[in-house]
Length: 418
Image (tube, rainbow, N blue to C red):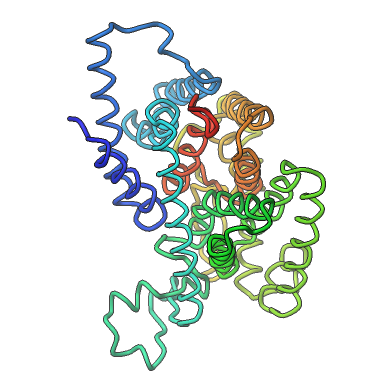
């Protein structure tokens, strides 16, 4: 199997686009690209022989290998799931090794370019969902459809539906939708920073970048994902700081001004934000969501104290809480906190290995000499903060995008290199 350069670039463009628009298509294309990479590696080994220096090429290879190995050891001894399920659960890590070893400079740029196009499109789609006001009620499993849409094709009406009044794009949940746009947002923001430094010499391109940022910002806003909002705010500040002190001050003022405008003119958004710290603000759903998370976090902490070192195993999390709507007991497998989730499943050893991975990534960003350094820093910190309220490492849709970007970060082919 061999892709000629135009075909390979076309596959990469489609893959980048599909990462935000269709997870099924993205998984199919990822499989094809991984098979092609493996085939090329086998042919290279047959031609030159396997070289020992081909192992552990990046600083992340060893901690990721040990993290997967520890997970495998727990699966074998604790029997909470099968090896096949464990490998499927962590298959997104393959995209890290693929991006770090199989892509050249032009291919990475093409992939990131179309990832941005996909992010902009789903941001626009999220705005359309909010404007259309079709609403899917998950507990009743019914759609509330405006009268003027009753004659529209059903598939289109369903695609335009909000999820309990929250934009979700083409994803299964508003949080996943918002998290998937994070890399594209910071990549486009990086292009905007370069346009600002050149004093907007290319007016058409500068307008396109501004429009792209606004469309994605609308998608983030209408997703009503509080954890992602906080992550974006912190990530944007890190982005500005890595650009320089002067740029950071400008970023801080723009961010504070934008937040003030949104909170002033949108009582609904203001209530949802304040519901984090107030028991009387926001909707009933906002308060239910918050109380459920607190219950899960308490249960997760108690579970960690029971088995602090080795955890309860992959797929071994079973947290009980009372559903605030049905008032019936419900069993959760997600803690809605990435760090609690990893510790509860893999113990302190697993959390330590994961933190090792995160430290190596930040070390790479800190010393990286590349125009995309601020974008990588911003998106990385955004994911870490969002992980306080969501276990995105368990979500293939988000994990694929995250590990892909970290592979590009660790790739030896930088944007300034030939």
